[in-house]
Length: 554
Image 1 (cartoon, rainbow, N blue to C red):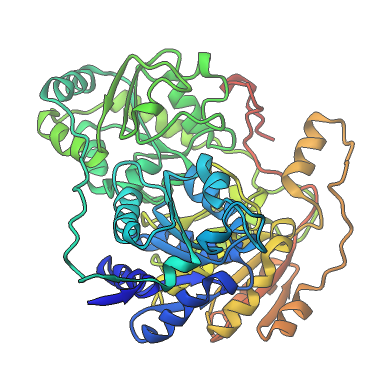
Image 2: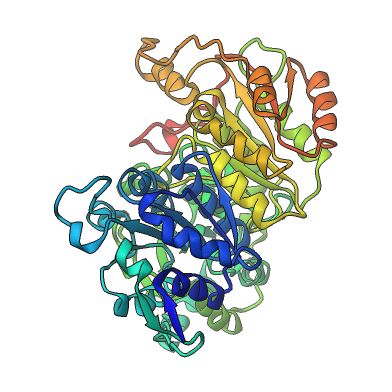
């Protein structure tokens, strides 16, 4: 049947089971939005305050549901406003399809109003992108975009479509197009036996896993391996929740602000199993000395990550689920009582959780949140001190319950991502944990949360400074606080009330518990302004380039 390019877009979204898109309309995108009007009973469109918020919302939707997030934008500034959100998804391997509309093909290259080569701009931060200036190209480009975004190491794909293509007509019958099936990287029997032999013969093994395990939905197999071979495990921030906080073999977060137990155990291990992780500079702070006593094994779906940051002794390029499924039958039931006892003793040593002279400490705030919400709660953070406190103190239970910008470290990510997570999980509680610095960047998305009646609770760790940079200036720059004490006078309670939501303040633990209980009863968005001290620190801390020997505990 004859369909316009805009109708083809809508039909292909439905074929890929997309029922929600985030975006912002504009002149070049008018045909696409006109078609959306026809499909409004099948495709829900969430209009955000800013295209960056829409990109973060599509990202949060994808992270919390496991489905591909979709974002629309118009040409020029509409498209360029997506770039930070696309780059955020790219660094954390999040499946997203960004569909942008450009000026008509006859105007391309002529500096037309709101013209920009968005494919050129986004080439370094997309898994792939397409420029569609002929209607015949459109179906294949869109179907391939979803296949590429969802296969192998996942990531964002951009499809830029000229306005004339969105109006042109083509014969298109939904369901006829057969996309090339994605190839799945699988291990060989030889590779599986080699790793199994190393595990079966190890005395002090450690599993270090990252976001690849979460993306690959391989948590069940990982926990079975930990149990069968009696191996303690540590993880990156992108994998928080894959193993429960109360699992006796869980030794916590690894790296710069990881637990003392995790960092010391990795330093003492004789076998390090790195699953779905890239040895980032926030984990392997000194690559040459990282896990220096261990035989290092790396399993990753992306061969480009092998030996990129840390040289390993043995590597397997494989989907992590396929790898663990093949490995488990070869693993002998084992116990490491002396090693597990040693690691358990390490867990008893912790860094200071309260610094400064304020009446309300971050650890108290997060403990109260966990006490008053259920294990299905989804936590979303921005980037900074509050992000690390959340990673350290939240009682993680589920794979998709901790959403944060890890690789790019995007301040302003949180509110848009929380909106996407709440839209994708209407029956779950979404808690947004932020700092006053990060929140100032994208708090405009409150209008979206109010319009959509989303009961997102934002916890604002308000120390009136750029906390993490301030901490580094304290420790490494002799207290020279350059541009980190902006002395803003923002009244967050009045701001959210102006948007149409509800605001509370808390200055001590009792007040926080009281207002948080009230927040849980509200139907729309709530902000809680939590007064914390400027001298609060994220500890433990290993300075950049340092080792476990350089760890700052208090």
